[in-house]
Amino acid sequence: MSHSLNIKYVVIILAIFCLTYITGQAFGPTVPQSGKWEAISSSQIVQAKINDQIERVCLPRIKFKDEIDQNYLKKQLKEGIPTQEAIFHLYHDGLGRPQKKGGMYYASDVYLKDMKLTYTGYLQKLGYKFSVGEVPAFEDKEFLRDILYSDHITTAEEKEKEKKKKEKDAEGNDEEKQGKTKAFGMRVTTIFDVLPAGVIPPRIRAQQEEIARRVNSLKNRPYETEIIQIDPLRWATGKMGLIKEDGSIIAANIEGQQHELQIRPPETKNWLTPEMIAELNGQPCEFVIQRYANGLEVLANNRYQLRDIYFSKLKQSWEEWLQKHGLSCPEFKAEPSYASGTIALEVKLVTGKWSGIKAPVLCQIDFEKNNDLVQQSELIRIFPPRPRPKKFAGFARHFNQLFNGKEADVSILVCPDGKPYHELGQKRARRIYFPEQKATLEMLQNQLLTGKIR
Image (cartoon, rainbow, N blue to C red; front, side, top):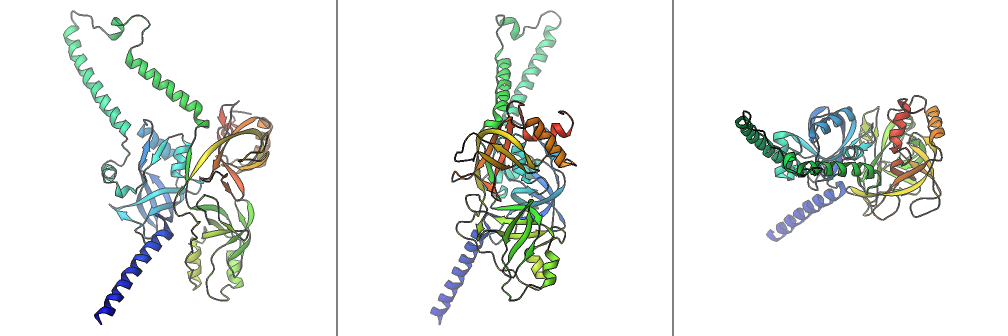
């Protein structure tokens, strides 16, 4: 009897271990949580609306490589990221439940739906160079303590800067005291009085060298090697098509294109009714596409494999919509080749000639010859102009008249296996830089929109 009980306990313990392990593997370190980006308190804390509750979300530890002005960064973030729907990639407890400690959730990143990029992607877009902490903020005790007390990032450079400022202030106080004693009968000697003519004092020389370094950094920025982190799931805006019993979706509009999609259907037979088909057809939604470990979207039987669908007007996910109709959604079966964590993409530069804007998120670039990254003529995915022009066709025609045939340096995103990264079969550019104009595509589009160029 006792022997059978012992076996039973062992089985239960193994089952719990396996469940915890499998669940953790299936979810990865984070789970996506829909919500709203309300505002940013600092470069570290976001005010968010999650499940109709105002919450604080702690962003990952960010180590900036250069000294930064925290107040200026905060201003950039407040002005640059408006309130919008977002996906918070929250660290969980191993069973898919978001961790909450110290009254805060903790995110590895946040996807901003209107801006179509992540928070860390926006920092890179602003030109900052940094690395992101590998562990959640709540596991970094020193960092968490700083957050709870000050709500901002303190970098090693800042500490050094603060130390130098204190030393300088101390020097100033000493000079001030000495000046008071000399003011009535002595001339104050400065470093310029004792150095030979034309010799620059060390402190001034150091400042000039730092200025030169920063200027060169800005000049070379379009050509620097970058590492872009992307999530295991990709959110793509579109409109729902016609769904079939097997979960396949036809005639769906996804980012302006029509592709066949696949979502996991309920196991109940004859579950789909004409009324349910009609309810979903044409619904604005976000398609959540599963990625492979190399960053590419999972395509099987010529259909993009969906992890989820979020119906924007209905405010329901695929599972929630099925539950509304009394149906259950099967668990997602992750293949070993599927991504379970963030994927690092490289940026490689290819020079070509601008051939024209074809759509708000699409342009054509002509290259001299084929290589491993591009064909002689490529449709490249780009970020849309901000703000969106009211008459896009006229805007595109005018822009192309000004810049067709101009040299363009294209920063192509590349997967870890060395193959070009693409979305819906089209390669993605991190940025496009026009050397003659010394400006990026985004800058030139903005100048045309604001009338600075005609």
